[in-house]
Amino acid sequence: TLQEGVTFHDGTEFNAEAVCANFEWMNNQPKGPSQSPDNAYYWLTLFKGFGTESIYDGCEADGNQATITLNQPFAGFVPAMSLPAFSMQSPTAIAENGTVQDGGDPLTTTYATEAPAGTGPYQFDSWNRGQEIRLTAYEDYWGEVAKTPNIVVTTIEDLSARRDALIAGDIDGYDLVAPADISTLEEEGKQLVNRPPFNILYLGFNQSPKSGAPLDDPLVRQAIAHAIDKQAVVDQTLPPGSALATQFVPPVVSGYNEEVPEYEYDPDRARELLAEAGAEDLELMFNYPSDVSRPYMPSPVDTMQEIRAQLEDVGIKVTPTPDQWDPDYLGRIQATNDHDIHLLGWTGDYNDTDNFLGVFFGAKTDEWGFDNQEIFDALTQARGLPTVEEQQPEYEEINVQVMEYLPGIPIAHPVPTLAFGENVEGYIPSPVQDEVWNTVVVTE
Image 1: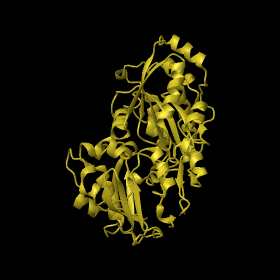
Image 2 (image 1 turned 180 degrees about the vertical axis):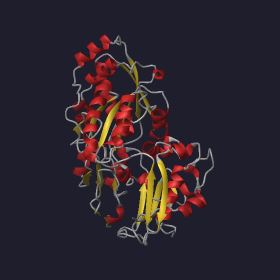
Image 3 (image 1 turned 135 degrees about the vertical axis):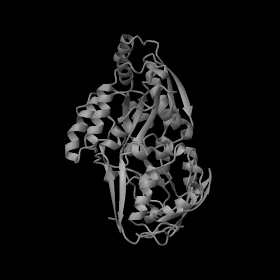
Image 4 (image 1 turned 30 degrees about the vertical axis):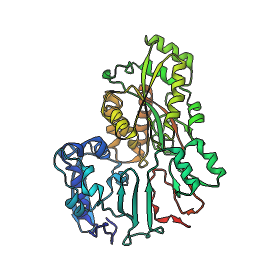
């Protein structure tokens, strides 16, 4: 049943017909870029495909009630609908400005670049690419109308430049504060706000034979795990309060298991395992993003350098390989075999184990390069159980399976930090970053 009295930013009524139109549109994207992981990641991950290959079966509209039918069980469907990726969009605006044909790029349409229309407290005003996006308050918003009428989202790639801009008063706040800048901002009297950590930073292994590295050998993966001092990575490169990770889900997620296998920091054991695997001369390409800060990875260059030093200490030759975050880094890691070990992570979208384990290990992918049908089948079975109570023991066992198989190394659950000027009030942090700015007040 839908909220009544809601309109899209172009004036179109939000109702069950609009919901069904959105689902049909998402499920029937044209072939080409529209169906690529870059543009349809969440639909592919959760609905498993498009058209008849999807688990989406249909949608029926009845006034203010929409009934969505799936062709297989998916216990996390309702919480998954809270994802911004599934935010409802005006069918009218899409039909007028967002239609693409097979092979077309949905990111270049007028709808995507000039006239998006949702239902939130702010509406799109303008986009100066590489510089800024301007938003204005939507006066017909169904909830609490925005207290600050105009928002300017400014692009500042360099972390130090963000810090300096806040100190100078050029901006009112910014996200993803570098750990090294926290003390400086405190001394300047700026407000620091921490999001509750609901994420995972990991070192991923590409087991595909096409990569050329022997990461399909479990002894090599175990050796790398024993070579890494997670506490040093946290102390040297992550914000205060960040916690060590033992598995690929945070402790608050159902299915977290305190009894998973752990690989303690032991450089001597790492060298023994490399020798046993015949990999004493192991050489690895270490991929990392060079120009980005993420909630789970605020300083990727620093983190890479710390882990690199630890791997080299046990005799592994490491070749640092940087790429720009988007599209180069994600495209390389998630859509090619041209990588060995890499830094990446995930911030949970909602509290469901499938949103972590299912996203990472639900099927064979170019990121991980392995084909473990036992893990794939176990995740599919757990995903389809109807209640969290039934899912929990299944996911606890899967966490053990994953850490025995060791497709990568969970490093930490970093604390993401935001910084604001003294004149900002009412910013409410969200562990899933789904923050609505209508409560924020900025005074002169």
